Length: 135
Image (cartoon, rainbow, N blue to C red; front, side):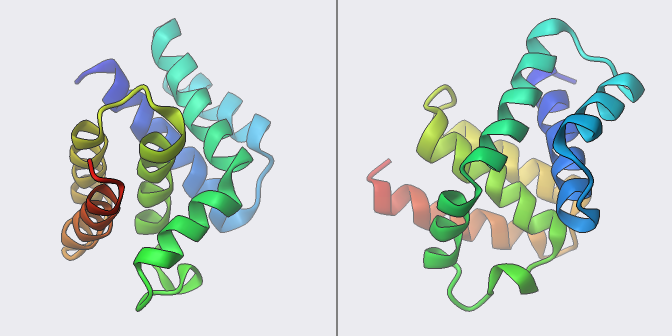
């Protein structure tokens, strides 16, 4: 598995824990990286995703809420919400990942960790975001 996918998986797991039980970001990241060490570039990318999402969470959540009007954030599955947060962060704020790659990676994470409908939900929200951005 590619390093960036592994980093996204680690970031998703960390954000899930932070979101669901409120553990401190730094300790969650340290524990996850201890359990599943990544090469330096993978660790850097995972940290960037988690810290970026947390730093810009209100802005990212607003983007998601504006698109997924039928699903308030607090009613979304925790996995779906955090897959979307990572992808929206990558698409709107990070500019290192092409939009199509960010969407594809998010859909893959949703397939791996979400419910049967997660893939379609994530793809729909991010497809709308890409259309609105003209990507």
